[in-house]
Length: 93
Image (cartoon, rainbow, N blue to C red; front, side):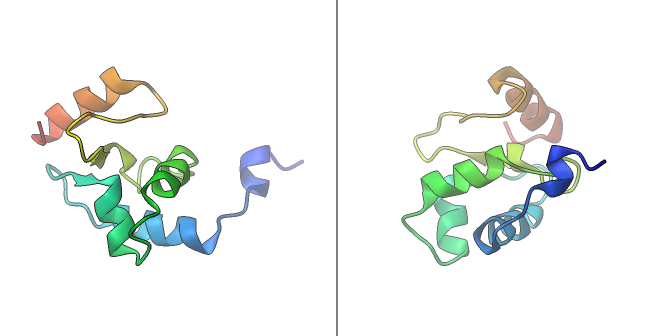
């Protein structure tokens, strides 16, 4: 029997987001807006956030490295404290 996550399909938009986020080096951050611009959808920063909320592989897609353009940390599946902790550990904050 397949689990729900193995049945989940990744859209081409999500794949573009994940590919862009994979390229963010350890210790760096990007904004949701920057990711949207990188993938050619400059106004789709909320959709970038939605895609990252559905991140199927936290080990290879470091979605914690994406923050809000206003300087706030933004959301994270495991909470903002965990996101902040990961970014501090990597030297990004």
